[in-house]
Length: 448
Image 1 (cartoon, rainbow, N blue to C red):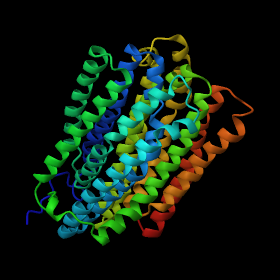
Image 2: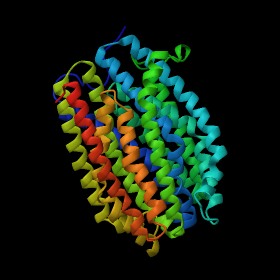
Image 3: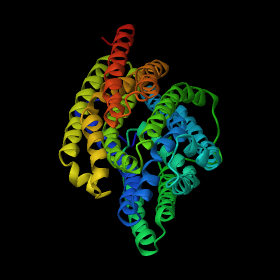
Image 4: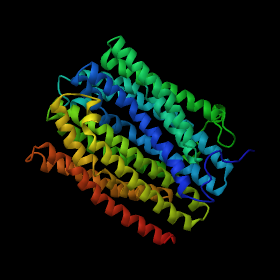
């Protein structure tokens, strides 16, 4: 059996350059995925008005609410494959690939029906304005029509990440992102299809994404090759995948619930606030993907090295991923905020929309690098096999705090700035808790 790892050798040699080689393509891939939504917003914002922009942009928190549990499980798949590589367990890798493929298909079908059925009730629950709700429902249902393709791509990418390959998922997204942009222009500008046009374009692009990643995995060398006739749920791999992935997914879901609640408060300020917040949120997503990339690097590098008994490398992995994350995210936070008129102008030119967008960028985007503290530490803990601990601390420090803020502070201080300030406060609280937990676990495992 061919067992050579086609990705990065994480167990030997230098670390800094390999972490960068792993994280940068992953961050770029996530940015390209977000660009699907951003291009949708830019096109409808320019050619279909601020109501269409609000309809597309305000759906991100709802999409996260429904999708994040299964995206979290893909983190578990990443961990399982990385751990098997560290132990040189080639049969375990084959079983993990087969199980990951099965989970992607089942989760995609489940989310298809769940998302389409719950689209309008969820939008009504968060008080989506009447001038936006029909368009929001249409876009959300079209998005979930393509969710099986998104799940296939995410889980397929998790397999490739586990073996240290973050470049080929990026190539997939380059192709599908270009197709998405071209279809947006054709359907919205050429055929005047508005929100329906961008929804269809995104669906087609996601289908192409899934097809490419399936092709890659079917032609991958053993033990990483995807073989549909051997696709099965292997109990050991599925159990570990869920043990690591479900806490991460629940953490994401609770995050999404908190963000949906915040979105409901944003909606109460009207469509200009919704449009401005949605436009600014794009740049938070872009910068968060840098954080998520280094967090994923911590999961994968730590997972392989702790399995191989390389404790000294684990110490260095955490230090490198943390400072790289803080510096790179901080630079992009500052750059986007500095050039706010240009970056928000891509989506909308109305002064009132810009006013709300700039408030969000100054109060949320600029200090966003603080979130590196708990995200990278959480990734390192998951790489060490601890997933429930960072999930619980993040839920308490970030999500519960935000929910309490919205329910107890905002009713008496109904000001947009008061709503936004909860983000940096929650990052500081959560970062302190998760960093302390990481140090305690490392002391117990003899890493420090």
